[in-house]
Picture (spheres, helix red, strand yellow):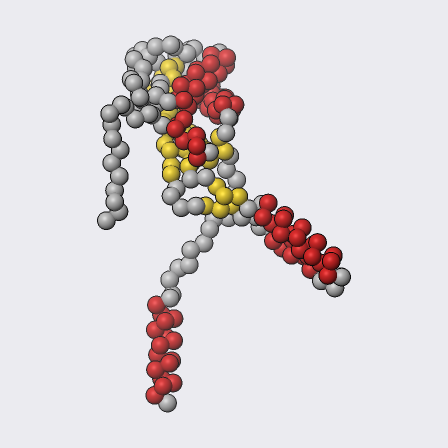
Amino acid sequence: MGKRCLLCLAVVLVAGCSRIPQPSSYTFSEQRKMQAAYHWQVLADDVAGQINAVLVNNGLLDIPVYVEHSCGQPAGCGKGGTFAFDEAFNDLLTSRLVNFGVPTRAKKEKDSLVVDYKIQVVYHRASRYQWPQPGVLTALTTGIMVFRNAPWEIGAIAAAAGADALWSTEVTNGHYEIIVTTSMVDNNLYLMRKSDIYYINDLDFWQYQPTRPAGEIELTSSGF
């Protein structure tokens, strides 16, 4: 009887200790991946379209705008202060605004509406996997179970096909994402603010952040 009581007590204690929220993922969604300069142009076109719409809706058609580099220096970024995406996005956005007919200045002046943007590179240390969309496993399982009473050769072929289809939908995502935030400010008030999130290829991360100035040494933590 004593052993039963101890066993029950142990079960209660274990159950009590384990009553914590269980981690769960978000519902399935999609996120685009930047992999070419054309993708930068698509983003610039979208941002320019929104800027033009804001200017039209606010009756600011004659107000000139100036697209500022991400370093925020009116005279231009210094050595190591710019990078591939910054240069390209600035040119693409400026060109698109000019094509829209928006009065766009080459130099910043006091009466200009400033369009600025910043790029945040997000690094995920853990490996992340993209599993099949909801319903894929059910569909594959159903397709395989249809053959459960068929000769073993057909069952083997169906199982192999199902496994191939399953693993072809599993993707190892990279470790990097970027957040591109574009703003247009007038008298310290936001007329527009837009943030976009994209995956990028791991080997391309350097295109989205300033190069380290010569002689600068990166300090890393030992983790202790």
